[in-house]
Amino acid sequence: MRRSWLYALAALAASLQTLAAASPTYVPGISYGKEEGLKNICAIAIGRNDTLLVAADGKVRFFDPESGKCTRDFATGLTRADALATNGDAIYLLKTQQEAKTVEVDGRKVEQNVPVGVLCKRFSWDGQPMDDLTLADARSVSSAKVVGDKLYLADFMARTVRIYDLKTGAPIGMVGKNLRLCCGIFGFTVDPASGDMLIANLGAFKVQRYTAAGKIKTEFGRRGTAVQNFQGCCNPVSAELLPGGNLVTAEKEPSRVKIYQPDGKLVQVFSNLQELVQGCQRVSVVVDSKGRIYLGVNAKTRFVLQYVPKAG
Amino acid sequence: MNRRLCTLLAGLLLLAGTVLADEPLSHAARPLKLVLGVNDVFCKDTACECVHGVASREYGDFLSRLKARYGIELELVFFMDSYDLERAMRAERFDGAISKPWLLLRHQDGRGRHLRRIADVQDTSGNASLWGTMIVLRDSPIRSLSEAAGKRLALGEADSYEKHHAVFALLKRDAVDFPADRRVERASCLECLDLLLRDDVDVAVISNYALTVDCAVEVAKPDQFRIIAETAKIPLTSLMIDVRRVSAEDTARLQRALLELSRNALPESMHGGGFIAAQPWQPPELAALP
Image (tube, rainbow over all chains, first blue to last red; front, side):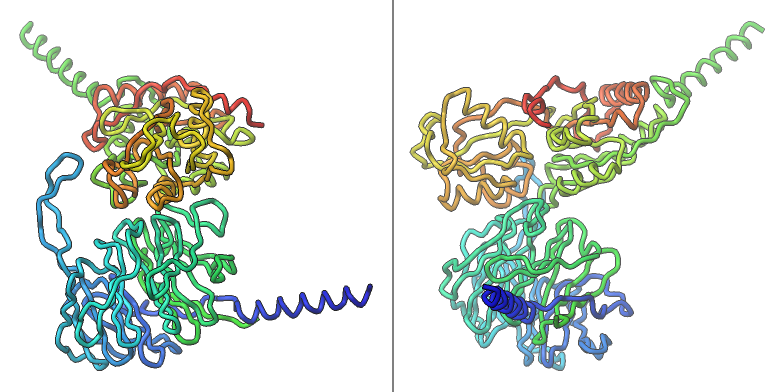
């Protein structure tokens, strides 16, 4: 009897150890861009050798992940971009194109800038301009990813993720339909291994995992006061995959960053996190190959905040 | 001499009139400063940016006039998330609040017991009421509440009066039953709408303003749905004072000033929504709470 208890305890310890190994604790790391005084972080991305790319103030800056120093930059010609993506060979900077149109709001006619398409500028890794990529049908862009030979674009206006051929810009497909989006925010990521897509469906207060074919595989989340739930008018605004299968979510005001298991079980809440953004703004989140998490902070002080995994 | 005296008197009267115009309508020399937490559906500082066209109320000018004319300084601390306001109130950070009354009154084991509603705030169209609407998809075969009996229902959680308690009161009154295993409770209107649009439920309950002054405006249009029932009306937004922290005299002074200023000199930036006398409301659920 006593021996069986010992076996049970050993098994429990082993399983806890396994979980700990799979779920490292995240602790604050380096802050990037404080010296540069990034006025408006549009988007961030991870490039070659885990280099952190930050699009802000009309430039793309390259930060060394170890030292936190900006090693170089190049001017983009766009004072404001909406998305940044790279595969380490080329850099893609995307911006929603808008036109002033008269629209009716609450019975009143007002002039508003209405999204009418997407400009996709291409640069070599060295920052040399290349031909723009024409993306048919895209009405707006909130975030983008490059995975393999595909460009994934979150089209807020169409409420779907559009997939394009990276070389030609030809449309390949769409994932997600009638997503419950608001505030112009649309965060997603792609699992390079499976082609699955993780979408932060903020209006539904859910993180949804779609197959490459566009079917919902799993989902979790609801609004609520409990820490594992999401808060605010609509959240989460971002969801990114971590090495090992867990995922990280970011919530705008009130700012919260949390790690979940794939089934939605809460693993960690980042403590002492200051307000990342104010009001209805997205929080750009990227993860590098070592599992380091980068948060684009657009609150009072503007920089990129790193969280690093600390093994058990 | 008489003419000079008349001129002097006229001048004095004019001066007095000018001073009076900028002076409190209800005099109170002693300055009063209160700090209130705010979560107001129609206020720009607490509403989602995507509805700022409608949720356009700004308190700044009103507060300036309140201070200039009545010597009352209200410091407002804005909360976009109602949960954060609840937490702050529980931590006893404020002298009162402006919010949906049930959100705070329901904490009868603590702070809510000491809150007194002294005024309600109108929305931009002069409405000061809040209610729940029970909706179905436009092409749903369900035409009435009685036809919805036994179907799948998404409604609010217990922290929402209009989407929860008022719904049960309505169902009880009309003897309509939605079995517990066919009911699902969600905290936000958006989640209830999501469940309805996904066909996970047949009927959803949302707040009356959800499709006009809430993030839901980005997700759905009113003409996608039909309303099959509405709950009883309750106050939408109230200014509540903690009677333990503010004296009865100061509370009465603030109440008079709020109503008087709203009636006589409401700034444009309040977008038509001023303070009115608190509508009588005694939710029976309060008596049932510990």
